[in-house]
Every structure is written in C-alpha cells, then in structure tokens.
Image (cartoon, rainbow, N blue to C red; front, side, top):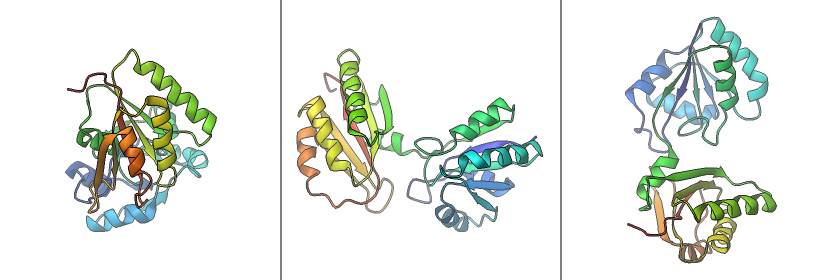
Amino acid sequence: MGTLYIVSTPIGHLSDISYRAIETLGSVDLILSEDTRRTGILLTRYAIKTPQERYDEYVEERKIPLVLSLLRDGKNIALVSSAGTPLISDPGYKLVRSSVAANIPVIAIPGPSSVLTALTVSGLPPDKFLFLGFLPKKEGKRKKILISIHEMGKSMNMTVLLFESPFRIKRTISELLDTFGKDVPCAVAKELTKIHEEVYRGNLEELSYWADKPSFKGEYTIVFSLEKEQV
C-alpha cells in the first residue's frame, strides 16, 4: 500500500518550502499538480525529476479511481496545489476522502498558507478566526452568507478571512461595507511573499475608497475583524 502525501508549496517566494517537502516531492513516484507549469518551475529550482500529472477541479472526479489504484499497488503519490496548502479553496478533498475510506495512509507535509500569512500581518486579532474561502458568485447567496456572519458577530468576537479575485474585489468591499458598517477594521493583502507584496489597512470605509483605484492584479485575501474592542 502506498501513501498519499498532501504537500504544501510556496505561495510566492520559492524559498518558502520545507526540507521535508523537497524530500517528499523528490522521493514519491508521482506528483499530482493543479498547475503542472507552475509546479514545474518549483521542481526545476530544486532539481526534482519526479513526473507530474495534471490534477485540477476539471479532472478530479475521473482521476480518483486511477489514483486509488496506483496507491493500492504501492505507489507513493504527492498532491500539490498551484500554491500554498492543498484542499484550501483548491482541489483534493474528494481524493483525501476516498483515500481515507479505502484505508490508504494520508500524510500532510505542512507549510505555507495564504490564510495564515494574511492573518498574521493584518494587525487584527488572530485568536479566533473564520475562513470563508471564495464567496459565491451569485449575489443572493453572497448576501445570505454575509448576513449570517453579521448575526454571528453580535455574540462572538472573531476575525473573518476570505479570498477574492481582482475582478470582484471592489464589489466585495462594497458589500462588506453595506453589511458590517464603515468602522469595521480591515486589511487586504495581495501578492504575499512576492516582490510586489502589499497589505492595505484601514476601516471598511477607507478600504472602499482604495478599491476604487488599485491596479488589480493577483489574488486578494480580505481580513476584517468583528472584535468589539480592539486590543
């Protein structure tokens, strides 16, 4: 029986990878990659010659039986996302669930995560946080989720994180402002660990002005606090 390794890779800076991750990627029989081109850059940097197989949301369902068969035959396989920790708003959960059900060993090789990176540099309370991933594209579903978070925030102090694309960042900040009010402290991080890393901080009203004129590029992580008293 082989082992499925869930390997975290850098979210930007290629040096942000652990020795264990490098050893694992170099020793397994196959790497399942959400983005083979991007993973290929990392593998070349560390002279890793393990073959890759595309494994994204479009092929996940049909490739699970083949992957399970390889694992049962004793092959060790690593799963990586395009960046960061697999499964977090990325493919892989269905494969892990199927592997666990088949009694195949699953081992995590921990490492970079844009969620925790953004949280730690936001300047907002990190002790209790809720991660929403990407909000739904449909306005009604988005509104329902935000209203639920608003109600929850009345009784539970917490910091909320979500991902957003550059094409919807302005709309999302506006929706947060309408739902939670202008004085809620917020941070928006982009290009984390990269050369053009930036973190914008302020309240939701101030961030709404910023959202009118940024140069939209890269993926954004939005962090806002429902803590009633900021320490």
